[in-house]
Image (cartoon, rainbow, N blue to C red; front, side, top):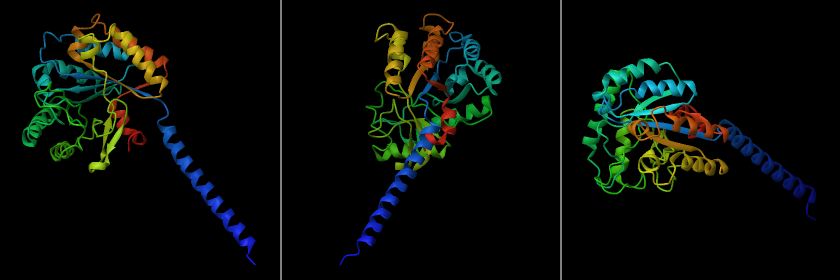
Length: 296
């Protein structure tokens, strides 16, 4: 005769273990989700214009507006722009160096491209970034840990699907890691780089955060591809908010200063206000990096 009591005890035990495992998994997931439950709005400026006369007054207005409206932003600064507009960058840095609203990172020295099918060799790429990083150390007193990928308008061939696409693109990420880079655009095959945070553990760099990047103002403000620029971004914010997705916004110093409605950064104020009404938390890239549950 079968021992039904033992069978039932074993079934009860397995059910209990399964329920416990499920509860632990849910608890871990909830803890992670609790840490990142608010959708984030990542506003950045690629500060790359080299003409000091053309950009006169830009940083002063940036400080005034971003402080008045409490708008965090990351400034990915091109090395050659720092070199050509040294006094402007110096003044900007000394004004904001202790203000967590402002995050300064790098945009290469010469707007050189990485992640392209026919990109420059590793030696040239490394020298370009090293030159830019030295300028950061000279003017800002610190090395950047983040970079934003530069577009090269076809001169380096098509953009690859990610740093995992070729042996050379993997070597590019290795090179950047060796320079101390810990934040870069999300750039992996199969990943929507406009939506997702990632880490690069799959190709040997779990210490590097990939951040979402998209909605460049060269398209919606400079070329006006989608009608009214601000209304277009409002619509994208609403779409992302409904899907509970993070929202990146890529601005350029020259575009925000010379191609917008005015030099009061009115479009930036309107977009930030609208994003907050949709429930977005505005943040900097360095703040995201420090929130490890978001990407690790």
